Length: 530
Image 1 (cartoon, rainbow, N blue to C red):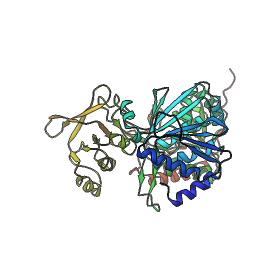
Image 2: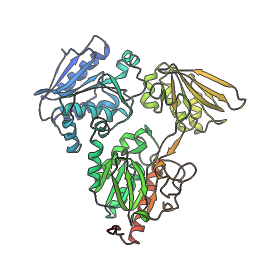
Image 3: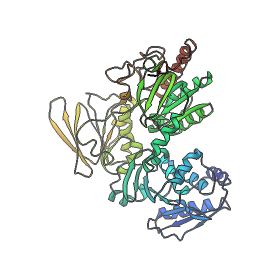
Image 4: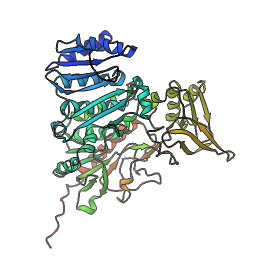
């Protein structure tokens, strides 16, 4: 199951264990159980600090618990085989259970340990899901560090009946105490914020004590990361406030056009960006949503960014890199059936629709690529495009048209996502060429219709925006407000590409540097006593 190279790497990792751990498996007579036995036997054979037994009593088979030998409450349970994207999660769970310290701030560990209550988590993942590892690892870390937290991490492909019964149609899917808790990618801070009612106040208090920055970057995607590195290298006090570090790259699977790197994946690239930023003295404030921009002209010489938790940050110069998000269809049924048949990530959720009929909405590169990927998994794909012809690259169109289980409908306006109250049952559309209305019977709808810039928070700031909501910038990445620059997908720069966003981030940073050295540091105006 593990090749020689992977075994060697795993053995090196297991050498980091500080105390013994136990693998306790519950197995049946099926093939997956045999593979689980083989995997656990292999792991136990690579370290004298690991033992494996096969007498567990978990009702889910195959499953296995990783627990600390000295404290059986410290551990986590996997149901199914955590391979593919989750092999790293398995390795980390082994290390953390064995006492190897995680690479998270101590105050996060303290917050986990301080949670007051009993929390029983179940989480479903798929082996092809690149959004799942963050959630798997967060829940594992919590269960290992707090005896009142349990986490069972379930590979949906091994428990299809259970997935069907619980109507799991999008991963990652998290249940708490048997009830739905959350869907989609979440970092540990987001999970803790949902459990700890004081988390927001604690974060706001921590931020409130920060001194003004010389440059504050709002947004942590490729543009923001590049901008921060360039600014820090100029010696300026730099901060990043990001809703989630990595941005939309975290939702991107295969990347084949990043020059000098033939192939990488979004989460991997995001991790590399984070590592590079960490090489510099940059204050990264993750999970911080910007809510309002108050220009320097209104607050006495420093720009102010107000955050959703009530705290605010100030800076001499700002670089806005808040990126974009997937555009919604905006039709009846889309919101009602989200995660119940309406999906936005074919790589994550495609395996849950194996053998079923689905639609992909959108005929650009993203839509056609999604349809190609899904055609290899599901029973049938119908691609629905609003325009009279597909807009994807010709090579992608040719590939799609060569697939036997794909239909293409153009000049089609989606009008409604249909369902039975619990899950998607079909799609309604109008033929734009003759006005006739049609329905398609299916079980899933994947929306791939472009991007919306994240600029709602700037509506009353004085920043010039286009009718589409993009930030208007000049050839130096300057906005309509002096000292405020912008870069990446949130701006009017054409061609929304990762490599372009990085270049624009660097440009914005150099422009901010030029602005700062040509202006005197502003003194905040202190209100005179009444």
